[in-house]
Length: 408
Image 1 (cartoon, one colour):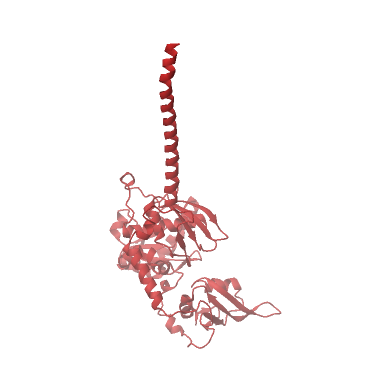
Image 2 (cartoon, helix red, strand yellow):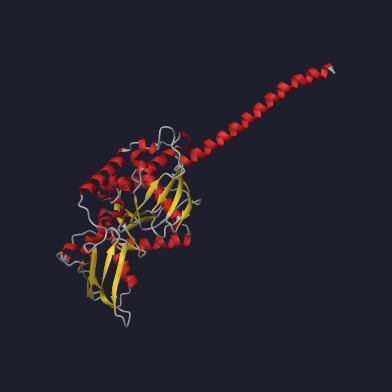
């Protein structure tokens, strides 16, 4: 009995110590779980005002491209040594995708990319200014939201310039007679969808009202329309007034009829890539995405034997082998019209669809610069697959020969 009493007395501290250890382990696990959830919220962002018809892959692809392009110029996100040399995409996932309300949440790979993405608030995507910010359940660290404290000159200065330009620019009503456009002399065989396709080359329509015969339902050859962005009104008038459509020549002017009619001669001086729907204009009109393109613009103007085509193919076009071969054949037939073509290169995505340099681009290598010049001139601004406007630019021969398909 005495021995057992001593054993019982000795076991009491052991049991107490064991209970303390278990409690500490549980507390540590709970803390780690809390830290993991906290870290996740630091990388999660809200994206609103998505263009109608957007899909999760579209949104993820857009932000991956935008963040990689901006980071290539700013160097804000420093890659870990363990991942050096790997092309890890900034967006890890897109969730709670609400198509009807046009918003979603995205989770970035790390907090630095989340900060950089917050700086892209207001970025233009398919004609819509996206709202990018922290979710309602976001809890900032003790020092405050790091996105408000971080200073990225290329982005913050560009936003500052845009704000100042907006303040200096005379205010203009979003709607009103000054932004409505009158069009007449439309061919009778041209349906409403065809008219819409023609007009939406310059921006998304807010209103399209074709005046119709109440008995037959056929339009009378004239009507009114208005763009969601009034800034494209002048460009649309410049391009469409005097435009030959079928056997008719269109007449286009402001609906208030107070301004002078723009002549067709004026339109001849406007390059195709200055239109809002061209890839060049879409990129260069937004300083947040355009930084990489702007830096490469001078390079693209220097003639070489290699011509690079943008907005010609998408990744999903290249997955099926038969479709890929058909696309290459179509491009080759068109490219050979402009001179002696030596090579057509269309980079394919990896089998697991992970990032691969150059995917989405087309490269044409000609035997001489003269042929390349002609191809660049003729292909730039051309329509491909009925709804894409191609941007063609020269590409450095040494980079192409080395298998490097980006300018950075």
